[in-house]
Amino acid sequence: MAPPPYDRNIEIEFVGNLRDLGGYRTGKGSRVAWRRLYRSGELRHKTEEDVARLRRDTRLASVLDLRDDTEIREERVKLLSDGGIRYHNVPLITGRGSPDPDDEDEFNNRFTNMGEFYMYLLGQEDFSEKLANALEIIANPENHPILFHCAVGKDRTGILAAAVLNILGVADEDIIDDYNLTTRNMPGFFERMKGIPEAEDMLEKLPAYLWEASRESMALVLSEIRRDYGSVRGYLEAHGTDSGLFDRLEDVLLDGDS
Image (cartoon, rainbow, N blue to C red; front, side, top):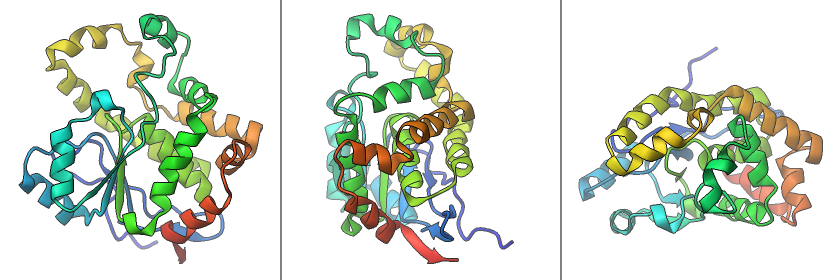
């Protein structure tokens, strides 16, 4: 078998957990196109030169930010826009997703792994609409190449990546593998967080599973979605999403037979 034409993992010091979602084969024999769709943690660019390098290394046309207003740095958004990169924002979760921020510790301890938390999110009334809105941005060819990200590139980003790949017909094992690739980047993120004084209390209180991107978590999500809806397509259709979205995603993200 020939080696892939590109590296999946891309090293840019001011972008955490950056990788290409291309190359995965679908059940129909197509492949997800390389260098068209990226996932990452937050973009920590500070200068015009940083943005220029990001464009040079990825050819980015757009960034889709999955964080909420409390996490977004407006000066960084302006640097992207001034550097010729379109900026989109679809906050998938507000806070940690707890319905009551005062009971966040109790809420976090309701779950034993990230998969249980993700299924909780997928069951929230407005989550399917937010997910569909993010997918619509990805389905627009004018936005390509596009990078989507949250803070770490694990949870909100992991859910969206899994949704895209499942819609395209990528095998569960590949989706699980892609999610689990984040594991290697978690120690570096944890060390960086320890250098932020206001984060110290949070790091001590959060349960250990919140720092994991375990294969078991994503396997649980895919299994339960299949049981309840048949697929991510079924989940979205059950919540009112037009199936034409799936055709548009295939048109812009698949490379044809290979």
